[in-house]
Length: 103
Figure (tube, rainbow, N blue to C red):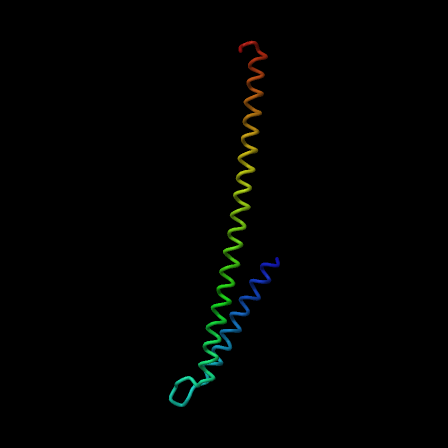
């Protein structure tokens, strides 16, 4: 739940960055070039957006690695449990076979 809230906050951060970027792009001269203020806002928006996206990617990579680790632990536990069940089953079959006097 906490990760979902952090993800939503980061998405909102990206949206705010884009909004300010659009506002910054409105600072143009009559010839259509960006003013100094507009260029500064644009650079800030690009850097902020890249940082936000990098943060999202890093969090998703960490979540994927964590879930992969848990899946590997589960598979290991399942394999151990299956091996124990089969060895117990084989031991029971062997003891029945020996108790019947056929072994």
